[in-house]
Amino acid sequence: MRKEAEAVIIGGGVMGCSVLYHLARLGMRDVVLLEQDVLGSGSTGRSQAILRMHYSNPITASMAWESLKVFQDFEEEMGHPSGYVNTGYFVIVSPVDRGPMEENVAMQRSLGIETSVVSQEDLEELAPMLKADDAGGIAYEPQSGYADPYLVTTGYAQRAKDMGAQVYMRAAATEINVSGGRVRSVTTADGTTIDTPKVLIAAGPWSRQLLKKLDLDLPLETTRHQVVMVRRPEGLLPSHPTVGDIAQEFSFRPDSTDLTLIGIGEEAVDVEGYNQGVDPATVEEAITKLVNRMPAMAEGYFRGGWSGLFTTTPDWHPIMDRVGTIDGLYCAVGFSGHGFKLSPMIGLCMAELIAKGEATTFDITPFRMSRFQEGDLLSSRYRYNVLA
Ligand SMILES: Cc1cc2nc3c(=O)[nH]c(=O)nc-3n(C[C@H](O)[C@H](O)[C@H](O)COP(=O)(O)OP(=O)(O)OC[C@H]3O[C@@H](n4cnc5c(N)ncnc54)[C@H](O)[C@@H]3O)c2cc1C
Image (cartoon, rainbow, N blue to C red):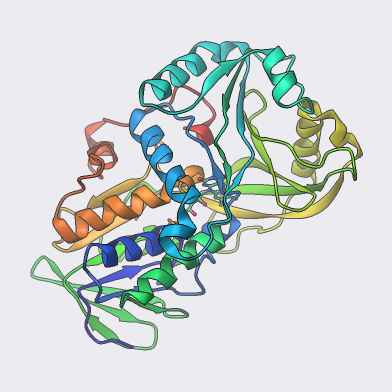
């Protein structure tokens, strides 16, 4: 293992790997990424990986839109596929959320994002398998869909390695060594010390415990989200669009075989020892909601599932910042249930901050660490957090 690096990234999820790649692109190639397990083994590998632009804030909507273009052209830039599948995406809201949905769509359109409010008749034409007669409003994004989180994460890591970066797996960072108010080195589980002036914490659900060792207590919680798989009835439903169902507070998308993946639930749990499977009562709730939206799924059948962790902040938006009290320390944490779709722009902005001292592609000050003390939180037009 290297004993020196221009920077060390802790965490080989989609965020750490995206930052690693973008640092290499910006000319910082002597960078080490440490992953305690294997790449994508945290929240990333459990993600539904839905790509959509429907947000309540211009910054996240624009980041998602620019990121979508990266997922679409990933193979050209990276030499590896992203697994992007264009399914189209519907947002379905109850009557009380009609106004907020229209405001979001107007905001998105003002940014050049391809989306519109559609009618029941449009829905019937675009996606006859969906039923939304209870809905107060429906929005549609024709270019949205999903990608493959494993392919994207390893694609970023591989390109970064091609440019000189080092990736170590089964290599947990145990200490970030600080003296004189600045980062000096990182120690790993096998006792290696890597001297470095810059460290990025991108350790997903484990970030809080790493930060605590430095007496930094960020408002990060871990929230269990369940993914339920249902096999579609043969012949009846070859595929369907992706749906963010705010009215029923769940989401679903097809995969490339005959499965539909349902995302549901928000339960505060500890990072260690949480139930990584699905709960029978939640399976029943998920399938009931799915059948409400897609009646043909009454003939589908349950094929298992898993749970993963969202790392949430009080406003369900990330913290992307330098740590003011420790020179050379940065964090990209708290991406909750919507980080994957933003990961190309997050990687780029964090790399700009680390390599050049400032993020220039987007102004990331809305994601600053101090916003919680300042009471300047980002807000959502909906109560359903996952669609912040
Ligand atoms: C069930 C589920 C569904 C989701 N669905 C979507 C979706 O549809 N669309 C979307 O955009 N987002 C979705 N998300 C959110 C998205 O997946 C996450 O925001 C994103 O993957 C977070 O990436 P990360 O790199 O920050 O964290 P992680 O993927 O958790 O990566 C952190 C890595 O750090 C490593 N690590 C931790 N501590 C150490 C240490 N001390 N030393 C070395 N390595 C360490 C871990 O092993 C891990 O691999 C979903 C998340 C879940 C859980």
